[in-house]
Image 1 (cartoon, rainbow, N blue to C red):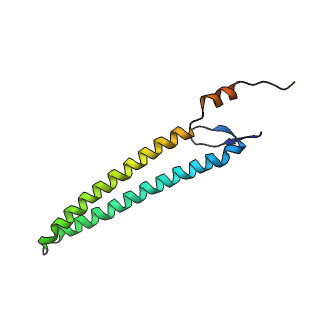
Image 2: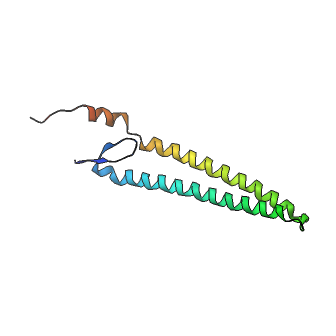
Length: 113
């Protein structure tokens, strides 16, 4: 079985060719997780701006509750987004860490005679 060296900015590692699909799928999942966090942040910023805009309108004091609600939902969105990002990132880190058996096999080198 051929071994392929995959580049990781933090640690390069050799991986069997049959596990490349799994590894790349996990990398795509990590990127999707980051993209999802950014969309939560974007939505939260939109709600924050909308809440501030509604609170700045002085003629319509009876809809100020909507501005405060928007600010509250903004905080909820950012909290949920960060929580989900951290939770999935921890799961992915466990999956991407090499097994201790794999490391011990790489350290042992037996030449073919």
